[in-house]
Length: 117
Image (tube, rainbow, N blue to C red; front, top):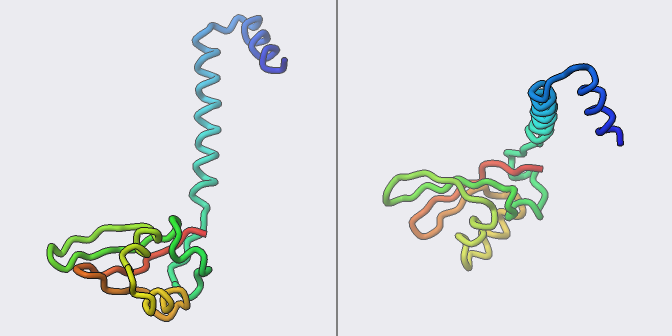
């Protein structure tokens, strides 16, 4: 009802249809900018000792991977990093305890970068 009243008032005030559409688009744009500011305010932890255990191998964690052969660098999430560990249970336990922040996997060097909390 309120929305219809706003439209009716705009039309009665000799507003053109273009002005009405532009006003609506501008309002939606300002609303979307407000949402982006909220997204950017998320906190990141870069010290693995401060990361909660359940976040270390989650999709919110970021790891850098350096390929030993091709010398290329890429980024993976925590789930992929855990997959790189394979059967290295001792290294997995040390990562969860915060004792180490990197490990070697076949032909890659994997290092913890940050986690979004």
